Image (cartoon, rainbow, N blue to C red; front, side):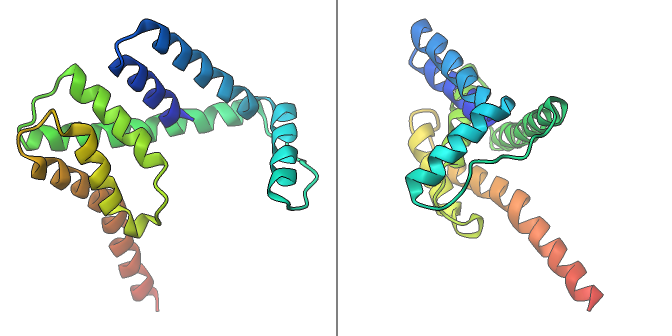
Length: 171
């Protein structure tokens, strides 16, 4: 929810049109209504079950508004960590920080949300999306690919190897 909201705002900002920005914010907020309103979520899930042809009664467990808000806040913190990792790695590679870089990083994170690949195999997809988004911003495309791969390694491979070590140690 947070990633989609920020990506929609970044996309509309990159189009430099306040009307698109307003529409993006309104649509993003409208998309959050089913998340916070269990009745709407039950209706939507019932519709989706019928649409994909599976049986289901559309019953969604009711959770408190506070719990849902905590999940959104934790999601915002997670998004901020990813965003900060990209900015720090860009600065390490001497890519100057600017409004355009910030907007394009938000677009990159939004596009990566829709990766059709398993996390282990999506480094190529992430790099390709980063190249498409940043092609006009950097002189050397290899820096963008390297930055994207570093974030992927830091967030996926390092925890996997640490977990693997502890699993082996436990046996």
